[in-house]
Image (cartoon, rainbow, N blue to C red):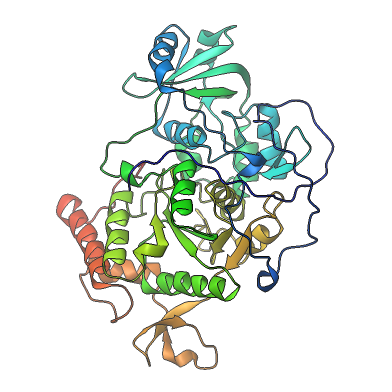
Length: 465
């Protein structure tokens, strides 16, 4: 997909009436006076309207420096105190720069950090509330804090010593690691992948401020053409005359059960009166834990799903979501949903245990399977988003294909877990016909075969795309 110019289609949205708080570093929100519907929307009674949902805060906040100014900003960066970014830090710069976290204008200052930890929401200057459930923060250590001294600005550099951004009007405050982990994951048990990677050994201070990103973040991995910003996605949806956008996030290969869910969702939206619902198939492209399939292989598999006609390319947009993965269950799924609002999605498909993982110490899931979708239905700042819970799909042995589970005849259904799928692929066995398109399954087998050839079956280190 080619890069596209920014385009925002604005539609009215409901807002809460709340008291104002002191000035923060959010972009000013547009004030729209519309009564707030009581309770979560019942999907069959939704009012069908044209145009895309507005971004949080009323407009998309992109933090990229205009091209004519980039050389000057680079020169300025070399004269400032510097902070070296980790791979995950750079991914968060990417997220912020394109407006996925709108209306944030940079790494969180302490007030935004505390609101995120304790309320899963941020209150804007006009009193309205937007959802924000995971902290987007930058950690520094004592030596970096000392080098910054009394400066009000710092430059952010990547691992190759290239200037990436300037952080202005900075605020430095303590990094309460235990509190952050406990409130984000609901546990401080050892073995939480993101916490181990980005928090436990990080600096004891956090630095927030207004971000100016010097150039678009690129990875040069052959996948940048799929990394569409919220502005580019909105333009693509508009070009396709979308009157509804339904988002599906995944970090696993697409099987025919997923495809059934997505095609059935489009059918339901058409029945509700929408004329051209568009699917945003949106694999997560940031940090993932060690046993997840790397992004490059997942994208190969997703392309085969489209090539084999499992999903319709005319009504599907495949793009990469640049956020790192926390595996923080009901807390994190709110972030995933909120970011898709900023990309133009007004429907969000949610399944069993979204953003969850196994308990790092005990032999059980870390989160209750239904809590993610229940939390989304009640989360502050997500009232405008329509939540579409998964229907359970399994392999129907009587029909030889994936179908929605019928509890009246459970003996006819075969549930193929992710563990079972991986076992079959590793042993180069073929799953039942109709479970996954042949091209997609071939990619999965090739991935596990590449592991065997390269490392004698050892799963590679965590992938930071």
